[in-house]
Amino acid sequence: MNSKQPVTMIGLGPMGQAMVHAFLDEGHRVTVWNRTASRADALVERGAVRAGSVEEALASNELVIVSLTDYNAMYAVLEPAAHALSGRVLVNLSSDTPEMTRAGARWVAEHGGTQLAGGVTVPPSGIGRPGSSIFYSGPRACFETHRPTLEALTSTEFRGEDPGLAALFYQIGMVMFWTSMLSYWQAIALGEANGLTAADVLPHAIETMTSMPDFLSFYAERIDAGEHGGDVDRLAMGMASVEHVLHTNADAGVDTALPAAVVDLFRRGMDAGHAADSFSSLVKLLKKPAA
Ligand SMILES: NC(=O)c1ccc[n+]([C@@H]2O[C@H](COP(=O)([O-])OP(=O)(O)OC[C@H]3O[C@@H](n4cnc5c(N)ncnc54)[C@H](OP(=O)(O)O)[C@@H]3O)[C@@H](O)[C@H]2O)c1
Image 1 (cartoon, rainbow, N blue to C red):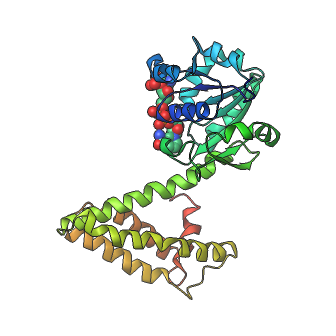
Image 2: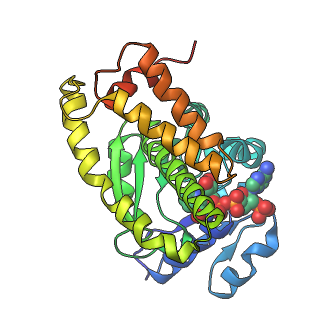
Image 3: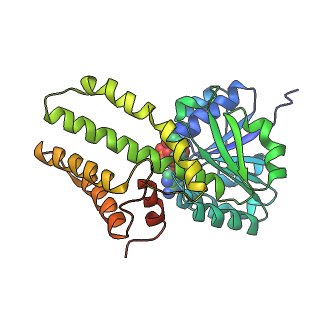
């Protein structure tokens, strides 16, 4: 007899499909449902069980994993069958904001279920692989009960009982990911405008990115201690530097939206009186919305 916990998977985009494969690889019985039913075909051939309706999918197992585009898609799918959430543990691995995640937890609880929210930090190729992890938040006891099953997907990192925390950590990663990637596209555009290929730029880009962890650790300690003194770097120095970046891009005829936004933030820091402070003083500025 199969002692592995059976699971239901709702949402079979690239991520949901990878998750079903990982559960099947570990010997779990998996019931699947997706709006576009044909997305389940290959999984059913591998042994997954197709549910005929969302209601049936919810009724099949206590543990229900959801991987949809966002929480609005989750309401679109689950609202008509909300009564079947009673007694279910809904592990919502759809990305959204912390506030949407908290509202989702309340909505599931109103229907007698329990939500564990997740933030998936890897692409589908990272599911079922060592070294990958998913952030979770929600009731700790519920998480601990289901942790062994969830570890079929990736390692687990419990972030706390506030249901919004997994999404918050996920969004902290994403604000860094998107702006870092955009900075890379800008660097390549600048390189190409000057006759360099992406391959020419790559070694220096890697060197620049791999120097970042030292900066992050150095500033984290000082920021937590409330230290923004200009003993190591000064915003006025940074201001001159970011203007050189802006002008270099403008001279090359490259789009300047990103460097101009950086110059704007530095200028606001200067106007707020931080010229002689470290550029970490911009954190204080960023905590307040622009006037
Ligand atoms: N893919 C990645 O690299 C990655 C990495 C980290 C986190 N994530 C997160 O994981 C989640 C799933 O990712 P994915 O790549 O599989 O996303 P996706 O392609 O957007 O997944 C779409 C899934 O949501 C369903 N869906 C969307 N809107 C719907 C609606 N109104 N009603 C019913 N079903 C709806 C789709 O059904 P149909 O098949 O019928 O269209 C499909 O099952 C997302 O929240 C994403 O942010 C993804």
